[in-house]
Amino acid sequence: MLVQIDCVGGCTRRPFCDLKGPGCGNPRRGFFAFNGLFQGSGKRVSSVSLAIFPKGVSIMSRAEPSGISLSEAEAAIVKGMLARGDRQHNIAAWFGVNSGRIANVANGSKFPSVHAVPADKLPPPGPYLAGRDAQAAMIALEEAAQTIHAALSLIRERVQAASGDR
Image (cartoon, rainbow, N blue to C red):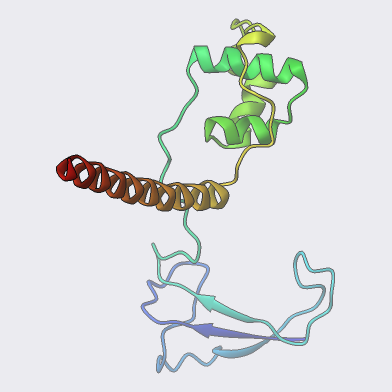
């Protein structure tokens, strides 16, 4: 099996990479023998295009942290929701956090001494609105608010007109 390796240029000559950028004249540039399965696919492939990126450049980077974390009071609610049988995914959606934060509370690695709040103090059980559904609801509510304001203006005009007729 052959794998084509295409260098994207700007190479910093890292120890594991002896390919250079376009026009570098590196004799090893081109096709390389590759035996086995393509990682993760479970399928044999005839060629794979790989790119060698300069140091500091990555294909995928992590998103910035959201800054959203759970407080002790919220962890108590999480524990109550878990005790009620709510899914960790739904609990995470309620608080707007990654489900890993809920797992941390569930397994006791975070907030181990916090007690669950009583069932009557819990939010309604999920599932909750997805972000796109919440956005659609907000748009519909804004349009409804404009209609209500227009209707109120019309009523006020007619009341004023009727009181001026007297």
